[in-house]
Structures are given as C-alpha cells and as structure tokens.
Image (cartoon, rainbow, N blue to C red; front, side, top):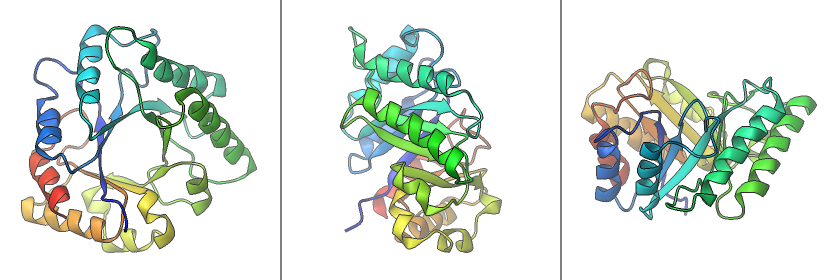
Length: 243
C-alpha cells in the first residue's frame, strides 16, 4: 500500500503572534495527515548558531506535534554555490538540535534550487551535500528533498528521499504533467502548485487526482508565493485528509 501523501508546506512566514495559527490549527485538526514543513528562517538557517527567540518558540511548537516533520531550507544555486557554504548552512540546521532550552531539531534538509541536469559533476555535488547532511542529522532525522521544480531523470531519486517534480503555477499544470512522471518514482515525487485560481471543488479534484496518481507530497496555494497562507488552506487540508 502506498503511504498517504504528505502535506508539503513551504513556510516562509515570520512567526509573529498568530501568524502560524492557520498551520497549527490544521495540524491539530488533521492528525491523520503528516505535514512536512519547510522551515526557511533567513534564506536558509541564517548565520547565527540558533534562530531568534520568536522562531525558537514557534519551531518548538511545531515539534510538539507527532504528525510534523520540520525540514530546513538550504539553497544550492543549481549546483553553482560553493559546497563549503552549503555545508555551513547544513551544519547550522543540524546544530539546532543542540539548543538546550527547547526542542528545535530539524528532521531533514530541503535543498532548493537543485540542479535538474544529471551528469558526473552535478551528481558528485548533490551526492556530497546529501551524504554530509545525512551524517550530521543522524538516522531518523535525515530526510533529504531536492527541489529542481521540474521533472528530472530518475537517477536523482536514488540520492534524495523526495524530489519536487513540479513547482509552478496552476495555469501550468495539466493531467499530462502528472502522467509524465514515471510510476516508479511518484511516491517520492512532490507537487507544489501556486497561484491556484479555482474554487474549493476544483481544488479537491486536483488533490484527489494527485493522490490517486500516487504523488508522495502535495501543496496547493492560492498565493503566488509562500509568505502568506492560501485562502483555501483549511479546505486543502480537508481535501488531502479525505483523499
């Protein structure tokens, strides 16, 4: 049996008072949905050892839920970023687990701007940062997501746990996009759909289609980005939970 699809949540919202309430309310209301939340503190983990006090409290709140997996945002600039800089970010993300006064551990790394082209050079780059991350994070907290934002060769799936095979606007989505993803990697694939313009019913249809297509992680938002919650956020969660 294929595992239920994750609710993938790019959370690029600063946690001012109440700002994350739509998320925590939905997490609590949908215990059967596993939420994979991308924590993007400062285009990555920032430069200090730990995030600020507001973020610490907010992350600790998320870590109190059994159905939450927090993964730390790190960008790679399509394999052009110096590996030492990527490793510094990964080290900071992994180091949050050592914070003494609250549980702010990360459960993995979301490598954004992941290179799509697979060749000896790019494979060595992505293998290197993935191995480094897995070693630092440790077993059970070492989920790795690549985000090329498009369908890529299946070789990448042997390195990452998940690959974002679609990150684009709703207008760019069609059934052919889903059908073009090889069946053997769909459970490891994630679809991130922004600028959704349909109503609740059409969103439910989209979610149902993606779940029926065995896509492993799904996110749909009416927003053009990830700095505010979708106007159909609660309905998205309900649709995913019922699918």
